[in-house]
Length: 253
Image (cartoon, rainbow, N blue to C red; front, side, top):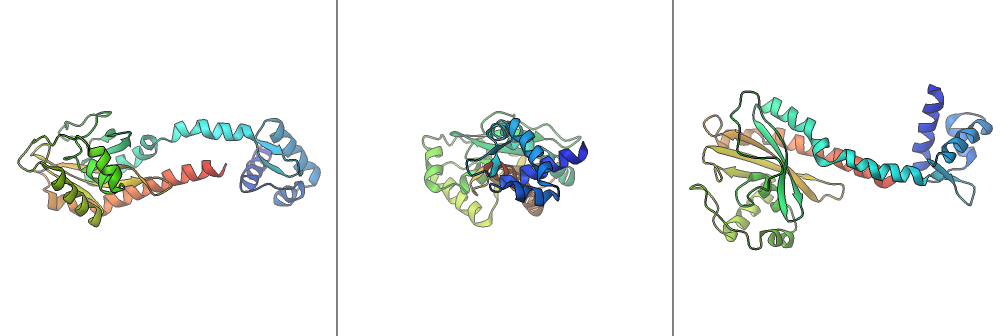
């Protein structure tokens, strides 16, 4: 039974890259054509493969449907959470994941360090676009016209002495973030907290969110926090690879 399942998996992987003849499948498995035919007939009857008019076998429509439904299990939060937990473990600081959802940038996950002070941020709540490092990391790496559309009508409310108070100042800060690769929150929403953030990208290279590291300024000022940028980048790149891998695999189906 285990060998049969293994052979079926090999067949699905083989035909997913292009239609195959019965002989090609038999050669792949190193089995008689009759054995390969029985496996293909079983997969075809279940809708996982299909026999094309030219006699070759390709991926079945049922497998395509399963793949599309399975995308719900591979959302950004689910893929990213283990990486956030690992980053929190390495740094000892709280990490956040923010995602671009329509016209908002929303926190969708948060991993707090053990024994740390609970922070204001709430899952599911839009982040202030002009203060949060995660928002800046997203805005800095979007096409400028998209950024301007998201900022249209935005109120530059003042929270602390370092809060950015105009669109011109924010755009200048986004340019700096784009050049260096990461964004910062220098006590701009809460004066006792600072953050750094780096973007997460999808299979097309577009920015879909960002991961941030947040620390109390009394424990780590912004200069010390920026020493963690390499760990932050590695985490975001790992998440981006997983996003690309999942979407690439499903697109191939």
